[in-house]
Image (cartoon, rainbow, N blue to C red; front, side, top):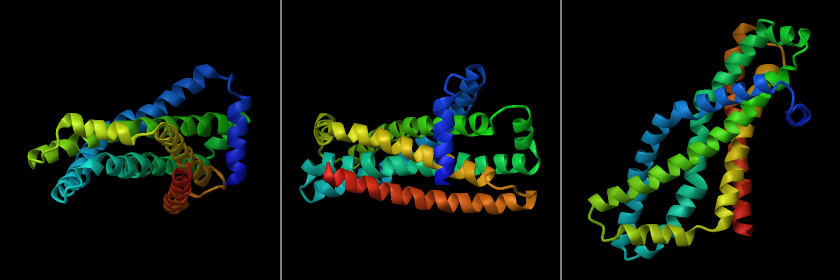
Length: 243
């Protein structure tokens, strides 16, 4: 899989100016598929996250007289951890699994070999758009999810009559956010997207599959994605502590 990653990065860099009229629409299609089409589901999950986590957290902090720590808790829990991982898991479940099925079926039916026979690099045509598209989609969905979750969480706290003014709440969030949070959030979400795309494409393309083996390859890819995201999240936790 490491070799597959290096090959994909090499093809992306060496053929960045090749067949732009074909690759750019493919990237846009992946962004729409993994990003725009998932906006309603992300909005629903963000509202649920805001009501279940943020609203109750603010309510409990106020109950124990620790409302001044609301901004720091929200940044740590939502911005650094829950926002990126929830968006990545949703994309993995909806799009990552579909990648394995599509590419595994194409490999089983000989479509990948047909592309190679026509002089079309399968990595450039099938993998690179997915890697770029999923990276951009998860980054955008994470920003969207965090914003809705923070707003809906405060609305829940407002309904519970928590004496925390909107200006004070968002001022705490602004004070808790550091420039490192924006950089690491962008880097983390892009890495999640690349990880999911590489693993799912690898499972679909790396070895010839029979049609009855596609479902097993999909299950294996999802398990590897979950393990990979947990390990990547652990790395970023260490980075946050160091920085």
